[in-house]
Length: 341
Image (cartoon, rainbow, N blue to C red; front, side, top):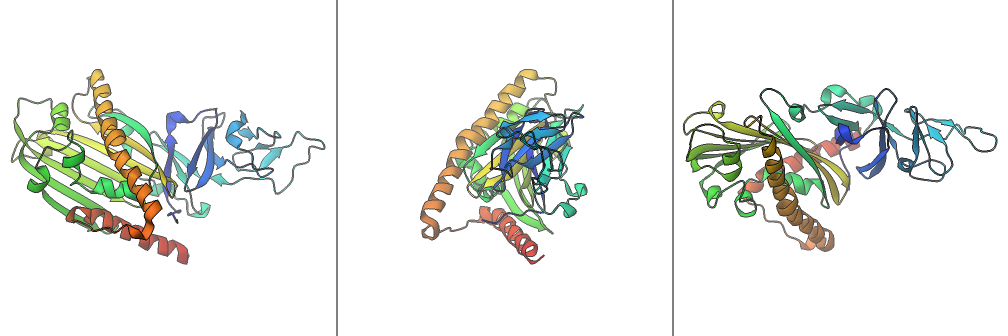
């Protein structure tokens, strides 16, 4: 299954990558990441060109990575620069692919397409991971055995929250929600408003203002290709606006691993309870309950049935699926454009 390649994808949280090699398959390509002596991130193909040994099992020497099988060393450009065997000759063809990689906002972004087109200006802004005087984040990583577009569909679909996520929405909320999907060029936005609702558990947990029984709730999901999703949830006194209440901003950064699996990086930044250390653990546990124990099993079963039954599975879209349908159409158009170039 094709993927959009001329885009930046998250390879890892910055703190995951150090002097020890880390391997991660991305867009069905095995990649190894490590840092140079100066701390700069490096991303290479994980497959040694000699006998296809896994480079991530090797050792970093200065800025080079040594293959664990025969000791060939590769520099950050992917060129073999050292051969400890016999005549020590270095074959000219002994090189691996080197990927453009940029550390930004606490994330390592890797360009999976043509090197000449790797423009760092196009790296999505995702500054939620760094604490500030107005924001405090928690974050996590989940491996999901499902195609990344199933996760996109899920995140743009606001109607499943009431059934699957009682922490996020209360019973009957979907039928009362004022909901619209709109598209601004290649950006898809799913926008839901619940006026004068009993405050939901997650927003009640974030609430640090005076007593409140009911609030206006706003849920805005913003998607950009290929798989950068920003969910903003807020609660505020009825008739006011989000600046009068509390807001949680949740980045969902999806990196396809294979046609049937996805690396799911998430960051949730709140603008309330900024000095409450114990609440970090409480919030992380609640979000993991939502993502790991509620969303993931459904998504993985979807993938299983789609893989096993193929065209026998009939999909009948509902109104809430409009965002996912639009996002898929944008990706299809971009894929067609990449194939023509």
